[in-house]
Each structure stands twice: as C-alpha cells, then as structure tokens.
Image 1 (cartoon, rainbow, N blue to C red):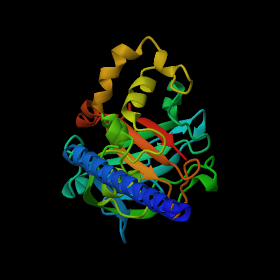
Image 2: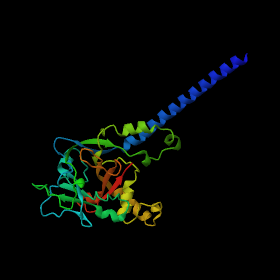
Image 3: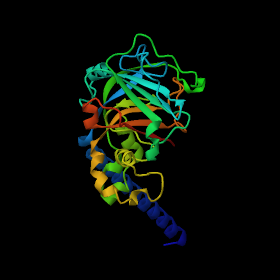
Image 4: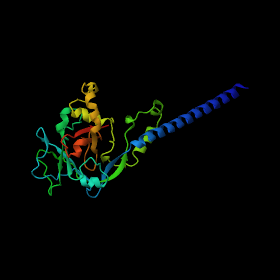
Length: 295
C-alpha cells in the first residue's frame, strides 16, 4: 500500500472515530438532560406569575399606596421608604395563590431604594416594611416631602395566572456523570416553559435566582443574627441549630427589574420577599426578610 493511500485511510479512520465520539457524547448529553428533567418534574411547585394588565386585578407596582391617612409612612433612619407594590390577597386566591397566605386583605410593600440593603446583614431588617390592611383606602396616601422623585415608581397593573415552577439544579443531588453532561440551556428552557418572557414577577413557588438558590437558608440565618456577607459566614457556630428553620420560609413575592415601572435592582437584578409560613398563616408580616440578587 502506498504511503499516500495509507495516510488517506488513516485520516478517514480518524474522522470516523471522532464522529463516533461526538455521537456518543451527544447521546450522553441527551440522556443526562432527560435524567435531570425527570428529577425536576416531581418537584414542581405552583406559583402565581404576575403579568401586565389593563387594571391591577392581583397586584400593582409603584404609584401611591392606598393606605389609611392615619397610617404612618414607613421610614428608615428618618428617610421615607419607597412604595413598591400592593397585593390583593383575595384576587390572588382566585388565580391559585398559595393557601398559606390569608384568603383576603391587602399587602403593601415598602423598601429602602436609596441604600438598597441586599439582605445579607442582620442590620438590614429595617430596610423594608410590609403592611397588611383589610381593604385599600379610597384615597392614596400622598408621598412624603422627603421622598425624592427618583424613588417614586410608575404605577403598573398586574394580573395573575397559575404556572409551574421548578428548583434549580443546585437543589438536586445529581450523579457526577449526569451533572457533568446535561445541557443546561435545554433544562432551563424546560423550567421556563410556563413563565413567559417579560419581567418575572411572582408569588409563591420556587424563585428565579440569579446568584444562588439557597435564599431560604440565607433568610433564616440573617434574620436570626448571622452575617451572611463574608467568606466565613457559613462557619458561624449558630448555623447547626438554625438551619432546620430554613424549611419554614416561603417566597411571598418576587419583583424583577421592570422598565415600565422604572424599577431596577442593582444591575437588572431581582428583589425576593420571604416569609415564614407560620407567620403568613397568622397574617403576621412583621418579620419578612428581603434579598436582592443581581448579575
């Protein structure tokens, strides 16, 4: 056999081997991706996705809070908090809202948009406020003089619909061969099937995290005095005793950055409002914890 013929056959063989290897890897990726999706499916949790509407059937972002005139506007260190959202609990229940929330009433959310506490410091707890009322006031509460215009947001009406949400793969105990091989984009597409393309505003269900999917634990620890903003946060001696309480926390409200409302958290981030289920069932929203994540 000539040297040229031998080189040609060797090259063809190498191409065939490489092609077979690619095909095998593709099969491995497809199998791993299906294994991850199969692991996620039984973990699905219903949420209410909040989307723009002609009128606020479930929620309203921005504008002025419809609180009684006798209600003091929440502040922090003498600085008024920004009004962020109003949530109609009765309307929420009609579209499949979580049963751990009261069946009626209104929640009014305020936040310190001047300093934007990210929720990793126990001292952040005065950076937000949730006020519950039986009904909205007939007239909105006027904005206090100390609240600058750039911290007053445009009113955006939101309707709600039920959708399935899933935990991220951070919460799964995947075999190494599956964890290293699955197609992340394909899994994310599956997880986002019912969520829509707009800003991801949501009540209940699993959050849409940006930086890490362990916010229940972060809320539990920070709300109980553990500073979560340093490299040694998880070495605190109190964590072992506090950690089981992470299972009590539920996603009360997720508010994405929203151009229509003029809301921006960090660099196109998201604000997550967490509440313990037992508190929510009693209508006690005085101990909610808020976390910001941003890219």
